[in-house]
Amino acid sequence: MPDSPGLVAILAYDGLCTFEFGIAVEIFGLARPEFEFPWYTHCIAAVDQGPMRAMGGIQVLADGGLELLAQARTIIIPGWRDRNAPVPQALLEALRDAHSRGARLLSICSGVFVLAASGLLDGHGATTHWRYTAELAERFPAIDVDPDVLYVDSGQLITSAGSAAGIDACLHLVARDFGTQVANSVARRLVMSPQRTGGQAQFIPTPVSPTPRSDLSRVMQWARERLHEPLEVRDLASEAAMSERTFLRKFTQASGQSPKAWLQHERLARARELLESTPQNTEQIAQRCGYRSVESFRVAFRSVVGVPPSVYRERFGREIRSTS
Image (cartoon, rainbow, N blue to C red):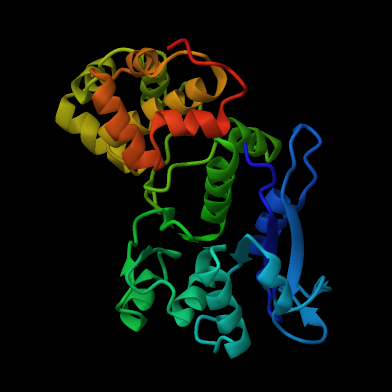
């Protein structure tokens, strides 16, 4: 657990996108008395001088100007006022300076066009709202644009798709700083499902119903109760009373990801919870999450989470000693 996650600076500007701005304030600026550790401090940094009028006619008063970015560990860029509107040079320079000293930059929706204009995304992966991905790729060919995901984490640079995907990206950053249990606690306070994995598709024509009326929802719950077993796609298809081919098609259409990818996400989410809250060793956790070997578990965990299980436990474990 970090001693302090540092200052989060949220940009404000004339023509501010209020929903994306509100997401950042809700997650990083709201007091969290339920936690016994330091939460983020936050400030509103003005891009423009004078009164700033947000969408809907709301006027925004900032805590200061772009000089605040020099103190921030994290900078949030809400959707930009217009994809074709020039980005002030002072803002671009402030973002480059912040990035060079190690700050994390997170854009929501069309805020990616600000990061793109700075040149910081060149050579990196990124995403934005599905309506704008083709334009982003055309205007900034040095960026590897992924049109099908909710958010892309490139280390210091995190870009998210449309507005609601900004919640997932912000919760992802919370999970990076505090672990999945804390991120899921924030999600519960938001009265929403736990943070979705970034690889989920943006546009899902037939979302899975959370009620038992959905066969796929029932099968998902059935699988969650059996993650300790070496489940395969054919097992899920059999439980759904479908052919494997039909199940694969329906599951992917409904959830935005393949059954195999979904199972991997669920297994690793369970593993993170166990690493945070139990003294079980890596081999025990690998078995409880359905991995055939501890080595395959370590490889999968590091590939998705970015650090080995042992390092994750050191960061986010609740003062619980492993049994190994």
